[in-house]
Length: 380
View 1 (cartoon, rainbow, N blue to C red):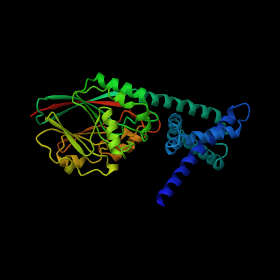
View 2 (view 1 turned 90 degrees about the vertical axis):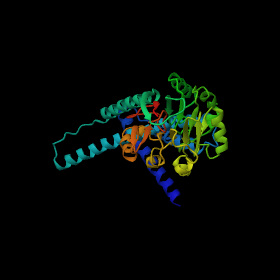
View 3 (view 1 turned 30 degrees about the horizontal axis):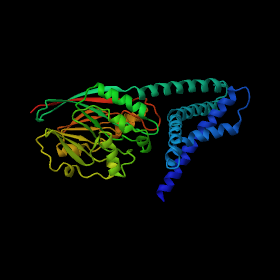
View 4 (view 1 turned 30 degrees about the vertical axis):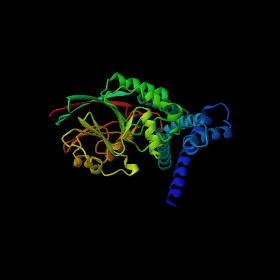
């Protein structure tokens, strides 16, 4: 019952915001166009734009893949209007309302000036600039480097070059062409090992299979292997054997509440995402030699105390996107003890990536697409 109420409320708010944006757009167009805009085609277009993203998700099972991809991409760009255009228009209306109140209380203080044309044009130019910058920031990954020291022996290894990538969100919006560029970027760093911190897939497993993205991922070159964990968006993982087989075909060792000893020198542990009922960490680590370095992948960086209590040496995570679009980073900074970067806590070191891909709007403002390079030194 509560779920239905929540869904109804969500779509009511979502539809209301879309209607408000459409209404303000119609008013501006009426002011700048020489003749009235036909109302029916305009509102049909607004409705289709607003419905595109939810429809791509909800009707995926009945739509051909190409249709889902187009709807998802159109709808994702439209979602950016909710993030930036809606609050801007709301602020403008608030200023207009205050100005109207001032004129009523003190006639003559503020002149009557029609700024619809100029204000609308300025908002559109600013919005376009944000979209252009955001698209560039989302498609131009930076290399963030960290150096960590683990005071334990690791067999023959004194140093490792580890590349961390999180939140690729491969699917309807981020396709194989961009994945191939990511693989090339990672390989240029010549990693010993690659860690994928979850959300490889973006809610729809079909594009990964249909576009043979596994073939692209097999291009990753890492002598000590490519390891991954599940994230909250990894669709398909409900059928875990099938998902694991797909990852294996891509050359990825999927770790779900399990660990692997690499050359009997150190451990890579993969924890199941918190949305998937993970096992207690102390149970996952049973059988591990604590004198060896322990590297933990955990998609969400919100169980730091458990890693500290378990004696983990280094945990890598993603999930936060560092808010992805401003002011989202202000929220993630309050939710997570570390939403991006490096933290040392109780003898455990944490590295959190702001992610490589995007969810929803294919833009980043206040964050950057990121590949993380970690130099790990082992000192007995």
